[in-house]
Amino acid sequence: MKKVSVLIVLLIALNGFSQEKLSLEQCYTLAESNFPLAKQKKLLTTQSELDLEVIKTGKLPKLDFLAQASYQSDVIELPFSNPESTISPPNKDQYRATISVNQLIYDGGFINASLAEKSASQKTQQKQVEVNLYQLKEQVNQFYFSTLLLHKKIALLAAKKTQLETTLKEVKSGIKYGMLLPNSDSVLEAELLKIDQQLIETDLNKTSLMKTLSMLIGVPVSQNITLENPEINIDFKTDIERPELDLFQLQKEKVAASEQLINKKNSPKLSGFATGGYGNPGLNMLDNSFQTYYIAGIKLNWNVFDWNSTKKQRESLLMNKEIIDSEQEVFELNTAMELTQQQSEIKKISAFIESDEKIIALRKKILETSGSQLKNGVITSSAYVTELTNLYEAENNLSTHHIQLQFAKANYNITKGF
Image (cartoon, rainbow, N blue to C red; front, side):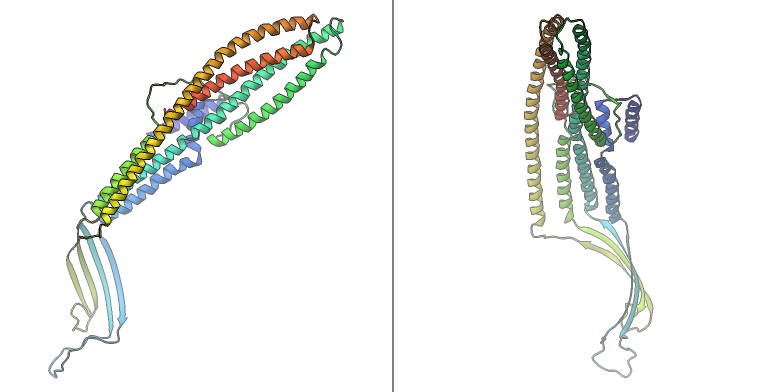
């Protein structure tokens, strides 16, 4: 069912590409699905299944076949001679073929403990891969919002260029009819060339970022694709829900499973065995002929004393658990501090946006006055370009702060976990 859900998400994402749009959520999904590290999840699952099957074979009967031919320099002989005895010493050349069957009857729960420990280990490894893939979201944010910033900058530069071109036509007309001094248009033309340079540079930087983003999400991203400008909501009150917390819990469960395995390691083990054979000699060493034979029985194996090895292993696991607890505390503390800094950043950028809007309103009034003064020859073209540039910078600041705000919110959600 999970595979079907992932497939649906990918189809929706690819459908978005056909519509020449790409969202931040689609980038998250594609990065987690197509990044080379994602292949490890399937590999770990397959590996775990194989390991579990190997462990389960411990409950199955063991079948061994042995064939042996030997020659020995001496054999057993009676210490006395009796002319009437028909007993002859064994041959120096001996032959044997046996089939042995061993069946575990009771192992004190060792195999089940081994299965539980292996399963806990597999879950921990899978969660570690998930944690590593989750951290890709920070990289996605970096490239996604950096590309958005350049896209907005290109749009503002294009708007500035359009306005300059309109003003240049008016200035040329003023020069033609003697209303403005000659060369008043030179400053505007120079500024247009400068804008063209900025557009080329910004477009190349955007192309580079798009290629990097494409490599990260594993899907070709064309220049025609529009990155959606997300509106991200945040909640300062919710608790941290990072996958790392689940990883810490799984690591503790693995320690507990390892402890159970250690406890079962020295449990008594009862097994049955049977051996059938054909050889010369058989079980009767004094009969020099080929004969069949068999042996059957039960065997108890119990390691009563292991020189405190089990105790020391338990102590080591206890230390390991304390290390995990310490790492979790450090992670939660660092995350809390990072969230505090990000909250402050979000509030700061929000305040900047309010100021930007007021500055833009004032700059528009100033530019409108400057445009009228330029047409009437009251100010020079340089003075007009200065005011136009001031307005452009104010609008660029507002656009940048809007994207930075969404970028900060996206990072906040990733830091908290969502």
